[in-house]
Length: 160
Image (cartoon, rainbow, N blue to C red; front, side):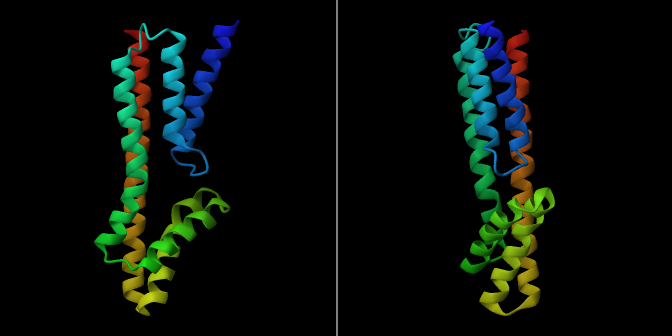
């Protein structure tokens, strides 16, 4: 019975983690990583060995880093001001209260408003907002791909 509950917790962590890759209020890849490490531990690392856990840990750290770095890289590539970066951060927080659409588009709006306040140039503000948004979306897609890759490696290790 106890083993069954641990496996249920393992699966729940992985599912919540996959949801968290697109929902910013859940630490997606951390939850996926926690689930796969729990699964490896339940099985005493017999099928999912320490090498696999290390590989999954590296993927989790990479996904976490990409999540934060990609948006900044997009903004920096467009020459965003500090106000645009602050605006993107505020937009992200505001977007949390607006559902998935808010989460996806409020960083763009925030970056554009921040850049406009800094430079008073509407065209530049739109360019910076779009570049920031593209960076965030690239990071989001990479994070989702890496999370599913982690799950795939874990399931393959369990079945082989």
